[in-house]
Length: 396
Image (cartoon, rainbow, N blue to C red):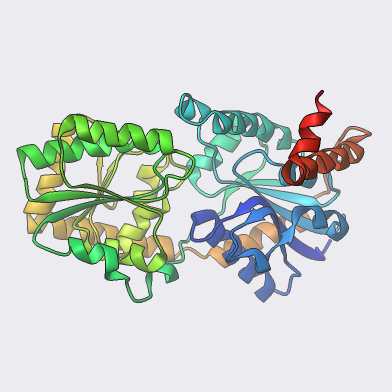
């Protein structure tokens, strides 16, 4: 059987993030192969809205001879609509952070992550194929009972780092001081507090002419950010800089001034900034947790002992010995070459062909009033957003 179209559906299309790059890359491959391919979302960054359709439009675009590539990273209305449609489905799992990381920090995200992990199990019998974007994620799918799994590798697009760097902020750090960099959202599973502890040990015991650059959005995690600032003040450690969200040009400048990339994250499905550091030829020192060892693939320096003084000694070894630094960079170059050498397009189209040639699964089982309930929910959401006084009155 041939597929008439291969569309993608996801909760949010973000600008400059790993999932966003992958979604756009998949669309390019599918269109080049002759497939009709659109992107359906609940929300999108304003810079990408014109590339997407509202997920509710997917109902009219649906057909049993279509394939939906469903990017699953958290429970959503788009996810539930995709489940109920007759299209064949390939699930691409980007991992859901365990909710316990957000307890006491972000109540809504605790609920969303818990619901997302619970909802994921419902797709075991719905999908023709379940793909992880890393071997770590594939193994999680297999453990959940998905019968047919595979890996659709993340092949990062570095074009966002190829423009002229914006030096207006990072240029102030281009001096004789050693710059230790972390790039990623300021969220608890990234263990930014451990990055700060390691830097404190390095700065006080090894190199007082050093600074820590923490680059990434903290939106929604202001409480965690406040805790981090309080920790910096309690330690009395100067030269810890929180940049917040930066543009691609500013990000390139931060990588250019960095002497070392330090990661202490405890939970990653892949961690694209690690390979961005490879691309920008910044040596990496990273905690060996979840998907990180596979992402590094022999590059960088992994550590398991999280004692700050131990890790600070590793950081010093890379920064103070040019031979060690050269060996680390050579290993990173080789790992990056292996990653970029993967045939992403061929792998993707092979999975599409595999689904097309496989027997059709039974139609998804949904409640008889599913669509009525969805329409009622959408009307209530519109009231909540645009007529909040009326919405509040409904509960009285």
